[in-house]
Image (tube, rainbow, N blue to C red; front, side):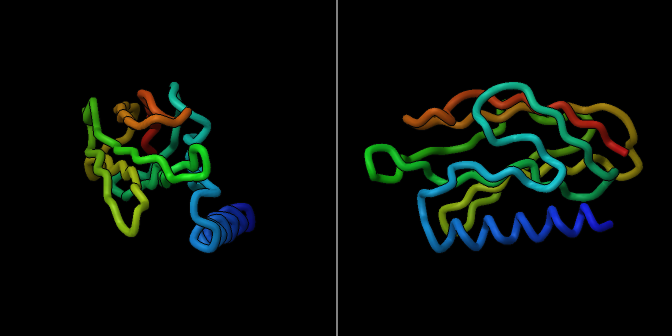
Length: 128
């Protein structure tokens, strides 16, 4: 419990810091997620039927200016759904398995833009 509380506190701190200093963070590691260092293959663990924040993305700074980007699901999950929500310039990728499903799942999304974070992110999911 203490580790989970610490992760939540750290996530809230990063969100607060990024709001105060726009452009400082391009990707944030969410509690329980391993997405954030750039395109590639990642693994997450999610609870069955519950929403799981995979990552949050902000515009990165290129040459002192925020770079435009977009996120799009390129391969939907077989045993759940993936959505991308946008609010105040922040894009959030959320995975939710079908209620009662336990097992493996996967999906992919693409970030387009002119920064080092552009590319395909393939996410393997263990649903418990």
